[in-house]
Length: 529
Image (cartoon, rainbow, N blue to C red):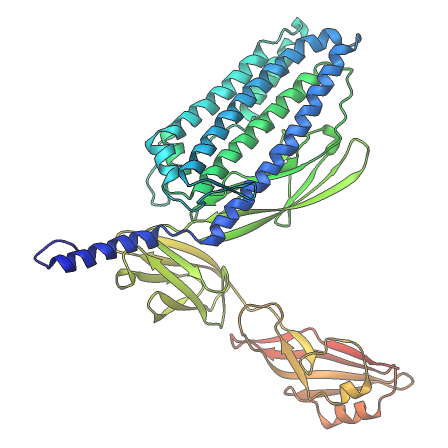
């Protein structure tokens, strides 16, 4: 673009265009940044709860060491727990240093006693974690931490008749400790990630905002504290006669990632932070019950959809040692990133509705003129309304795939196709039932079908309905109306009605935006005294 026989002025204009394009490509929305800040804050609150819980465990170990009845066993397990605590605190402090390095590189300031930095800085993570190989250092330290704490457990002096049980527990910890640095098999472009320190660093920090890197490191600190809690609980359980009383319980819910690309897998883990057998947590994720695994936590995997911010609703019910029933609801937020190659964003929601014009926005790195769309499934057709803007029409309930071709690669996006939900029957567009004055009913012109809490301006036409007038001390009168306006017989009945008389509208037939006819639930009213 800046080569060839062109004037110096034109070369400068072309170069400025390239710089602007690069800046636009790297822009991170304020909503995404706020999502990361919220997740990081939530993780740090969980770490504080785990710190308090672990402190109570160490206090119980101190009490056991001072009790003549438990001193002998306590003097075996208290030093083991102390070494695990020391290893955990060292790694936590190291990660705090890495976090501070990212913040300083992102222009850290202290304002009103709080740390503020350039949360959307896209260079600090890449430079510090990848170019300076600090990410690989973290990867090695986390791996070594897990090996070290397991070796500390192995060094415990246990009776001969307990060794088999002890080493079985160690084998379980080797599998279950949450200090696993998961590496995706492939990037959003299909390129395989090396399953090593380099692959983890690339997948976690390459061209991510500074606050995203901070959140990844906070997640590791949370895992370390959870591991410390599991191991210290095991130590005190070996003492036997000590009764552990937790004065704080925390319902823990987290995702294995807070930033992903379309099609990647998100794993949700939920349970009770204290992990006491009496807690007996019951977990639902997005409305569905999830069974607990052997570690007392529920794990659910979901598939990431299109770009944007999404909530996951987690409900956890558990019983405290005192027998008190508690329930906690949490919302985990995660962000699906936009691949640099191509992206498709629904302007309304993550669904195509039959019979409606579903507007979508499309972008790709090669520009609108080189971007092509194709559709399959759901009876979907596409029409372009403006540069980067399309209207999607669908005819069949199911799943549809929109594929974006930018001249370099094809990127598919899957979406649901649904019918517009049923409307609500109303009298005059506002009355949904109950007791109303006679005068209010007299001025109504007919029946209206109204869509509530729906993002589209979709209309339903009332074709016909049946009604029953029930006088308090008389025989019911029935009628049928074609269209949406009340008949003269209805009007006569309303004019003659008395308090406590009832009007019921049923078998309401409507035609929706997809052209199909439906029968929807009716409405009834009673005349006020």
